[in-house]
Length: 86
Image (cartoon, rainbow, N blue to C red):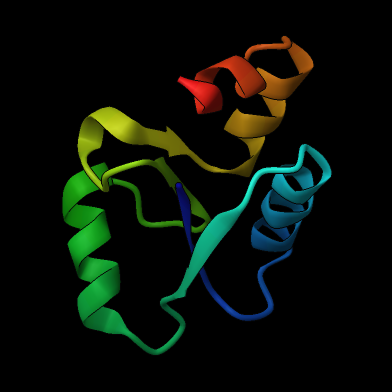
């Protein structure tokens, strides 16, 4: 399962969710708009302060796919589907 940590009114979060939906991938969205503890937890894992933060499977550093621009680039290189299916 894919997990997207997002915030309200985040266009990059919306674009990431739209991209994954267009590829028929299901995801769990975790809204960290007002959840500073959860945001701090994922920043500790990813060392990234921005959202979206996208993880496949377990929420650990090795499964961190970065943000929207990164998954968009992987998709343009025809690598995202294979990465998410493995």
